[in-house]
Amino acid sequence: MTRKPETNPKETMQKKSEDCFNQSPYYSLKLSNYFQAYDKLFEAYRGKSITFVEVGALSGGSLHMWRNYFGPEARIIGIDLNPAAKRWVSDGFEIFVGNQQSREFWHEFYSSVGTIDVLLDDGGHTYAQQIVTIEEALDRMETGLIVLEDTCTSFMREFGFPSVNTFTEWSKRRIDSINARFEDVDITPDFYSKKIQSIQFFTSLIAFHVNERDCVASKTLENNGVRVESLDLRHGSGGLHSAQIVIDSLRSVSFLKAILSRSRASRFVITIVRRFFQNRDVRQTIKDYTKKRSKTSEFD
Ligand SMILES: C[S@@+](CC[C@H](N)C(=O)[O-])C[C@H]1O[C@@H](n2cnc3c(N)ncnc32)[C@H](O)[C@@H]1O
Image (cartoon, rainbow, N blue to C red; front, side, top):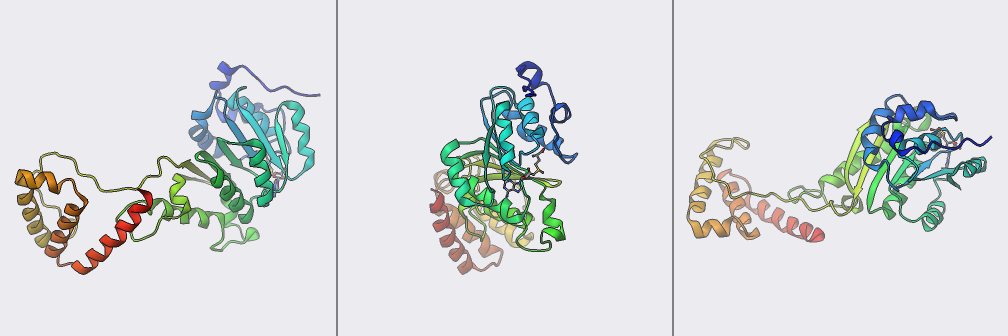
């Protein structure tokens, strides 16, 4: 007997993901902490005509859960290695049979499906499967959400822990990619710096917020507010205080203030003066500045 998914949008929007899990007519297996994460991560996508993809669909329980959760407008796609998953086509789901570790599979998948909004990986959970899945998605997605489940395998010996090749280690390196966008750091932006805006780590689940448009270079900004006499103690008091006084005096001359607060060259002069009074290596400052200029131009 074919069980049709629930299609009352109003009722759907009030349900929590855990209710949808419990009401699914078919078997599904999720960790208890996932529902909190789902409700935070997926709320913005509910009731909309999104494309949601789940790797690992065989028992069908989660496909029905997502239909109930996202509502009738959503295009729900399941992927599984096992061709038996095709049975869910008659329940209104799109099913693709293939191996998530195969880059050719993903090529064919995206050629056929087009743009997706959310990818949830609940497939085989090996590191190679997880890494290929996210890399192939990031190659195509400009915006959206990629969620990897059961990242607990990164800490399980039977999957290869301990290793620098676990999926969680791969994800930690993306923290560097995100921070490389700031002009003052001594690391270089990579492919992921232009794709991943932020990452959320939950127990056994990692969410990547993809947004190319918002992956902009980060720079220090100053507003035009009045400077109150204050002592910045971050790098020691004496020298810095003197530097601050010199800079503040220069700023108080109005035409200099206009120049100093705007141009990149003037920020450079300020840094040199600051470092001179901090007894820091001025030559190193000039080297850093040159490096930073070439890095910033990558984003400009
Ligand atoms: C944990 S079950 C999925 C459970 C389902 N998402 C749920 O919540 O009810 C994992 C599924 O991933 C599939 N799978 C395992 N390795 C795979 C691979 N390399 N590519 C695609 N699917 C795979 C299995 O056939 C199985 O159906």
